Image (cartoon, rainbow, N blue to C red; front, side, top):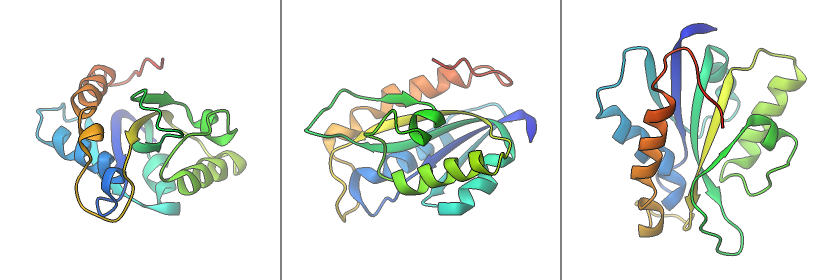
Length: 160
């Protein structure tokens, strides 16, 4: 694991509407002047390959879409891997099976897991089509500001 690098990883599928929110945020972050110690990666929908991406870092900010139930639009959610692994948080995510499976597998195999902060972005339209809904787009500036705040310190992440 790399002690001095932070991975900001966006997950999602831009061909499925709001599910691509992670990619949009990653693309916006790549336009900013971030420190060299921060890797910003478009992870797409990696499945089991997510293990390789996660296992080489000590600190990870993972950005993904959340499917809200009942039209809830309460905004960005910040969850931990345990919230997902142990299902304490059951509204997560458009990639629930993949992300949950990867995190459970890493825990089951007693693999070293990085410090992970998962930022769940609200997804309102997860149907075939390119582009984000207006409801989803409105959270991008807040997410970028939040990510910039968290990534301000290279070797330490203050988890909320």
